[in-house]
Image 1 (spheres, rainbow, N blue to C red):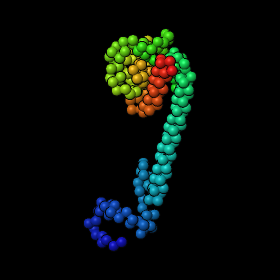
Image 2 (tube, one colour):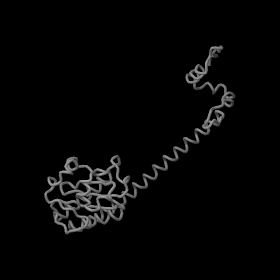
Image 3 (cartoon, helix red, strand yellow):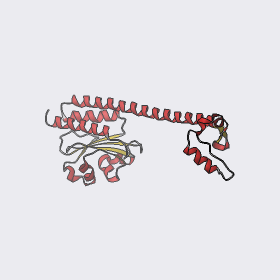
Image 4 (cartoon, rainbow, N blue to C red):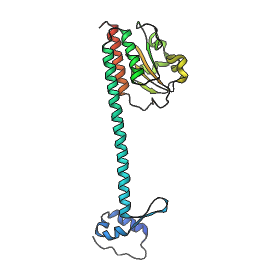
Length: 226
């Protein structure tokens, strides 16, 4: 490296700029690296070596935290996949629409730890139940859900008071977040939670789509006598 002449006009900024342009400078002067002191939090001072060591420790701790988060997400996804598999098995065993509907509600209530579940149907013949909501007029009779049905996609988050009351009736005030799943012209499936953070607009809907497809197929098969 070419020696650089220093004079009295040299400023701290000049030194900093030089080091930025020559990041390998301290490799040629290791004794200088050991003598340098860097400010730390609360006015503490540390050598460059100690600073770098602490920096590495903090980065490692952050990486470990992220890995732990990813592992927790993977474990939760695995549990969800198992529950969806069990839901699939339960509805495959159903030989009528009524049995299929009861199986769905029971699985969602028990395995997915939901506070409220509602199955809204248009023209399916099902026996009365607390979780059953009828809308014989079809989508036309549900203007508050027009946008939802138009997109053919599950949604999650907080519902309007009008939607909540239509689905959950007297239980509506307790529902702080919900997930809605379309059932391909048969109606919709709604899950309600007292936890405002359980279902959020930004959450993934892959598992909701899987549940929606399973329930739709089961009800169609049962209705068609298949």
